[in-house]
Amino acid sequence: MFTIDQIKAAHEKVKSGADFPNYIQDLINLGVKGYDTIVTDGRVSYYGDNDFAASTDKKYNALPIAAVANKERFIEFLVIHQDGQTDYLTFCNHAAQCGIAKWRVDIIEMTCTYYDSAENPILIEKIPE
Image (cartoon, rainbow, N blue to C red; front, side, top):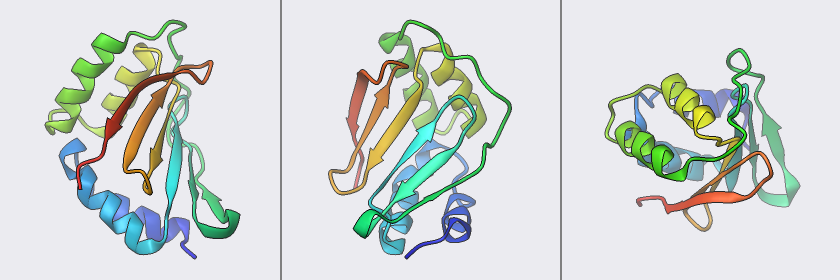
C-alpha cells in the first residue's frame, strides 16, 4: 500500500491546478482510490483497497468556512485556479470564503465533489484524464 511520504512526493510536483491531472495519475499508480481534503486546516485522508487509509497532519492554521455556500463565486475561483493563476493555499482560502468545507476526489469515478459544512454536494466536476 501507499505511504504519506509517497503521496507527498507526488504532490510536490503540483504547482497549480493545471498540474492536477498528472497528480491524479501519480496517485493511481500508487494505489490510491480517492481522498478527502478538509478545507479548514488542509488535512487529507487517502484511501485505497481493503479499507486501507492514511492521513496527513494539518497543513495551515484554521480557516473559517462561510456558513452559506456561494457556488457561482466558487466556480469563478476554481476556473482561475485550474488555469494556474493561484497557488494551493490561495485556492483553499477562496474555497473557505465560498462555504466549501471539503472536497472528495473519487479516482475510480474520476470526479471531484465539493461539499458545504452540512455535507451537501455543491459542485461535482469530472477530472480530466
